[in-house]
Image (tube, rainbow, N blue to C red; front, side, top):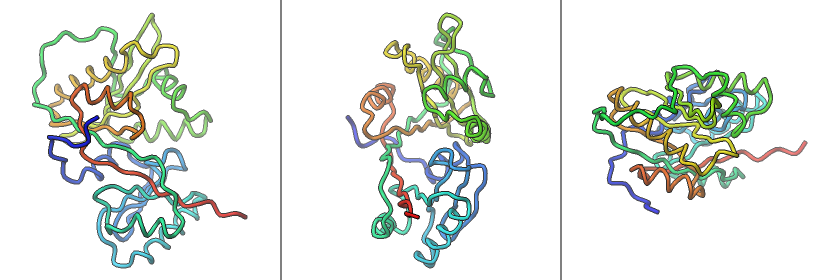
Length: 256
């Protein structure tokens, strides 16, 4: 699989992606932003380091106290652009565990909508329908009603397009396109277990690429787990290429 992209990485990509999956509350800290969403998804409950802090260890202690006060472990999202450059090593030395290595892939668009026929199996809306949500949660979770309520708040905290693929009057696959300025982020690409390997994910992605062109977006990003070769193969076959990568550093649980 390809590792490098012919596309230039958009400026401030980490910050842009954060706006595509916006936390319910954010608190500025020296060098970045702490994100809180009651523990639902690491993206929305982690520190995004954006600049060089004046006091790395002091800021780290401050951040740990913020998350502890909310009953959450401290989590950092570490990318190629995270500052300070040795932050990953600092966290590792403090006992933080590496988790969820992820590739960021990007597709530049020409800004023009093309005239191919629309896929009649696809339905688009600006809010997630109950069937969209049920399909997403059936595959990815969460399962608890309280966490599902938080999930809805996170999903709808950013303007987005929700795509559903219908088979025999049933929603069998879904995806989400977050709209952030001139860019879009593709999230929540899932297919129900008994309907996989039928090309539904590809159909959803092609539909969202057309929607992005209609919205005059200049490019799309998506995130894929580094070990998910099947998904990577699909995305790369559509022209997406790796422009960055990140992982999380998760504070170890304290034994009581």
